[in-house]
Amino acid sequence: MHEETDRETCAGTTGARPGKRLRADARRSTDALLTAAAEVFATSGVDAPVRQITAKAGVGAGTLYRHFPQRSDLIAAVFRNEVDACADAAEPLAAQHEPAEALVGWLQRFAVFIGTKRGLGAALHSGDRAYDSLPDYFQQRFVPVLGALLDTAARAGEIRSDIGPDDLLRATGNLAMPAHDDGEGHTQRMVALLVDGLRYGARPRGN
Image (cartoon, rainbow, N blue to C red):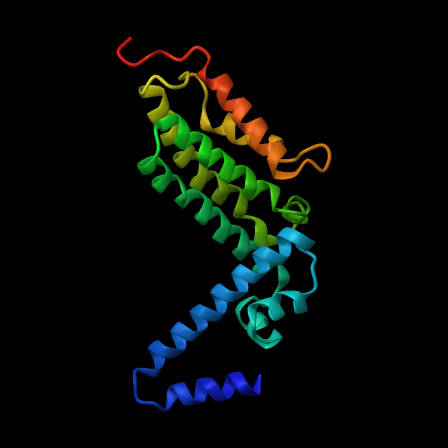
């Protein structure tokens, strides 16, 4: 804590826009904590010891609690950050691949997102108010993204047009929970099989 205080004090006496410098330092600390927490939660679950997160982030416990006073605040922030990263992955996939291939790529990305959220389901149903807005946030970010990918692939005649994003999100989420220890490979195969089913009955372009 002393080292961090000294660093902030020095930043404030340089005369080089200290407020901006402190905001940048705070942003870096927050980003480091969110990245570290996401990695720790993926391997050890959302109840992992705080010291694992702070050690990986390279910050002190005081820094973590200043940004995220409660564990639920950190979990919610990690979830939102990961939702944003997953949703934002759709645009470059759509730009780089044919429509159905982009759809498969994004569903694989979404399945990995779901598969690494160990313990999050229980947290979301714990009654903590910090999680109240997360289900709606999930829908608001993912439904339009997947809907656009589906519409593009259907217009190209690469998949059928009678499937909605809500059903596909739910189906892919279920596939992201393998019955045994088959891991990510199992999920990828199941998602590919699911999209193969969407190709059945597709109307070729121009028909």
